[in-house]
Length: 261
Image 1 (cartoon, helix red, strand yellow):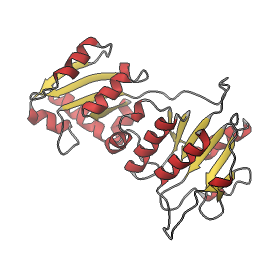
Image 2 (cartoon, helix red, strand yellow; image 1 turned 120 degrees about the horizontal axis):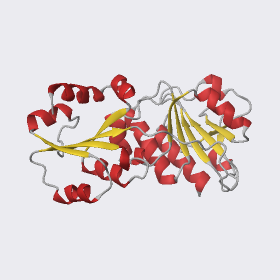
Image 3 (cartoon, one colour; image 1 turned 90 degrees about the vertical axis):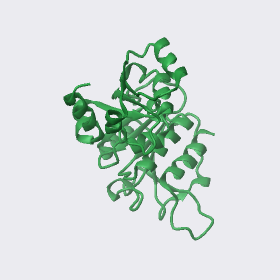
């Protein structure tokens, strides 16, 4: 690896350069394996860097026997650590090309469609957990607004536990515009609202209806320009103590469970 190549790869730690190059870094055995197992991302794994003392022969064999198209290169620790973003690295890093989201608005799918929309989610751990939750419950799409944490941030990817490779994500969306479009297509827009929302337990979800569930910022909730739209239904998860609020990723899980059960 040349010095210039190393500098370019190091820049992928920054959102600006991830956006320019359309690529991001993943680190660790589990994330590499999840990328290889994903139909959407398997062929997007372009390069793999392995530290000289890496000893997972099974994973190396999996590379050799899979249709991954990745170039494999061994690096000394002094070079490898310049790319690493973890305190105790497992010794393997991948360079992955971003995947495009796919449209679900006009699908002919006969069963219900469930979409999660996340507005201004700033905490990478929360966003990664929302992605993982969407994967668990089989959400058809996750729409993430502008001014949210970057889904290709290493902390988001680790928090997602590799679910990023399986969830259809529309990133940096104009959420107000997207919701208006889904509403025009007869999707039911459900907005979380701790003050004005109806208890989730009182809502009946149709087995054939299509839904978009809007989750808001950790501190301020959903913005007024969305929450005050009279065409959207407001809901909340009932609390059983004096606790001020519920974590947004936990809220996502509870609502998705109620819709999909």
